[in-house]
Length: 323
Ligand code: COA
Image (cartoon, rainbow, N blue to C red; front, side, top):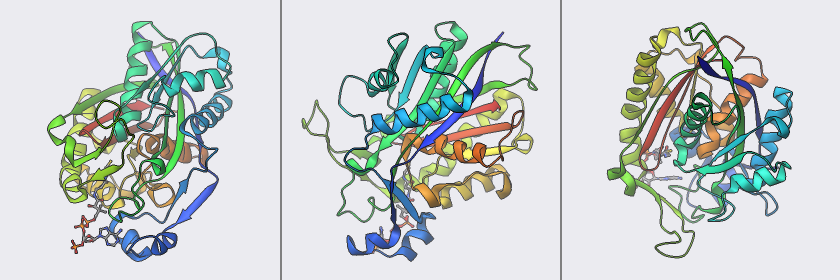
């Protein structure tokens, strides 16, 4: 059988770091409130010359270098983003062009904070169906451009950044002990779409709009949805949470991460946390966390890793893989 194995990962962050204290001059908030309620201490904010495409390109180049590959080796790009450079064409084709690729195909995927998890499963399906062999999966966002900077309930939570992963199809005996993507579980439920959304769009207001969120409502649903989908992915893979080496959750809020891990019975030392450094970078958060844990030597070849995300829609999902 064909398995999609991870060949490399890479990340990119805007130059500017914005600490919580800076928000004290913008809105009625404190560093203490933000840290206590979210665990966030800082986030990166894109300058005018830094866009979803430029950050995505930088993360892609880092992943290619990590894999020892060049753009010529890639035949598909899928970019998870809710903050594309333009409504169309897909920002993925801009990244394709920036990488000097005139071959293969590229498209965007929009599942908000679950985007990277959705994109990994799409890449895996393309690989296993034979449509692609090596896929560049990117999560890149510039949420700073859609924030209402006068709304303290949302502007303190998000940040900009990008992460990328290269998946390659290889012949595999297909055992639990073999490398690659082992199982996945995806969900969405549009009846929750008004709890986390952007109040604009081409077909409605002809504007880009700003992010709106009922934070308490999102919080209320998050832990249950996350644990359901993680348990489904684990069951499909034929393992339990105790078998995992690493849990790499979506980085929205430290309290949601802690509560989900506790409910799943995953000890703190197996949970990768970067929310204090990046804030919520939506589709970029899981690959940014993965990139950090690979760079510092925590995640190693052969480890069992569980990726999870939940976001606007609501959308949610999990991917189980042997690194
Ligand atoms: N600084 C200071 N006070 C703030 C604040 C801020 N930045 N933002 C909100 N508050 C206030 C609220 O106005 C409220 O005041 P009130 O009681 O006078 O009305 C109070 O703090 C408590 O608000 P509440 O919404 O109950 O706080 P919370 O403990 O639920 O924390 C969130 C708020 C947004 C941090 C939390 O709900 C959350 O993380 N939700 C999930 C958000 C998320 O992860 N979204 C992305 C999913 S992909």
